[in-house]
Amino acid sequence: EAQVTQNPRYLITVTGKKLTVTCSQNMNHEYMSWYRQDPGLGLRQIYYSMNVEVTDKGDVPEGYKVSRKEKRNFPLILESPSPNQTSLYFCASSLWGAAGELFFGEGSRLTVL
Amino acid sequence: KQEVTQIPAALSVPEGENLVLNCSFTDSAIYNLQWFRQDPGKGLTSLLLIQSSQREQTSGRLNASLDKSSGRSTLYIAASQPGDSATYLCAVNYGQNFVFGPGTRLSVLP
Image (cartoon, rainbow over all chains, first blue to last red; front, top):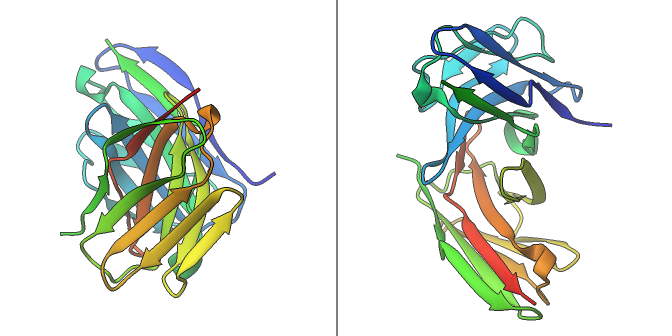
């Protein structure tokens, strides 16, 4: 089954404790992206990747890192989480360009205390 | 700047009504436009994808149209049902990035 898988789905952590949210897709998609969704602010792009070893900043990259060492994986790293990073996070993937239907993971709800 | 807006922000209708949701975008150099449904606290479910060369797409009771030159798309829902209650988002694909609208929150009353 074609899917985007995120882990963990739910996480409560404390300020400053490094964490990684994993994202994996099985559709051989070139494009992958991370979004955060906050009430009243909608979906905002954090980082995206056009292909392996190619990443770029979205609208709200501060406090986040990503890597794209393999085509299927695109982890989101919070080196030193802060309470303002409490949010619902989504990973998505797509074939780049005209065929680019966006497929989403189920979301990861992160709470930073 | 590429911006996407959606009107109305919220809509409440009785069951059985036909309704139209609107999406507008400022930059018409799009690859495609996609409509999603999101239930509270859940992920986004893709409803329809319209390529830039297409005028409309249909799936069941849903029909989406695209007028690229005027920067508009509409999502038509026929014979609405309480199960259609959700937030509907449009996303415009510009190749390097996808820009999302803020969504329309739909309530269909039994």
